Image 1 (cartoon, rainbow, N blue to C red):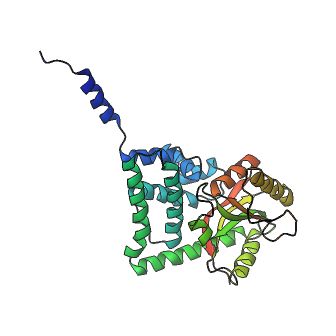
Image 2 (image 1 turned 90 degrees about the vertical axis):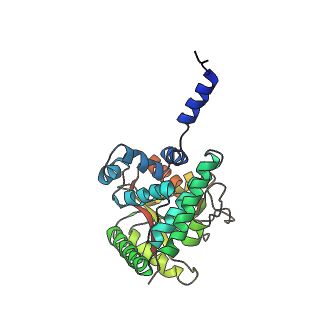
Image 3 (image 1 turned 60 degrees about the vertical axis):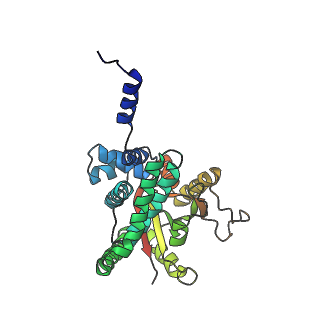
Length: 280
């Protein structure tokens, strides 16, 4: 009768149980504490985009499709003809890669990097006509965003493409983001985007808009700013705390942290994304 080799059997079981590189990336996404992880987990529950928006207290459901694309891009290197969507995905995947360093196996890390490269280079392989059509669609979506925010008060957050793609503080995943308040968010964004044309080579990118409900805008903004500063997310380029100081509303932070503050304050998200506005 053949000798039973227990050590060989245990080794075989370990190999059989080892997750694939793709499954490792999937697990990394599933444990993400930001919106990417939120959307992934709710999709796994079988929820529709509408129900996901309800669960996350977000007014619209379009963001679900953006995060679904990012998940597909991370797992399979899926490309897109939309320039804005592609840049947003590359930024999200680079943040995911940062979280995966030292967590993912070398094989999984290489797969994630290869998928990021596929998304980045995908734009050079896409039919120019298809990309132009996608860009027009994104421009129309940005216009619709302003139309939907017209007359609405809230806390807004925006930045510029350079800051979003080349993080100021890559070790912590933070970059410069302006957080302010306005009685009419759309009107304020138009003002900022028009003024930016004179000193910024890239369009303004709207990141978040949160509703303050019946609460006083200035009080909510003050609390929002206090929480950002208390967490060490103040803009290091500022040299004082004068209320007249230029740039006092700029913080070295990230989108997930903004969402965490909004959730803690019970604010409803009116807009989530990165619509770009070139000004008029």
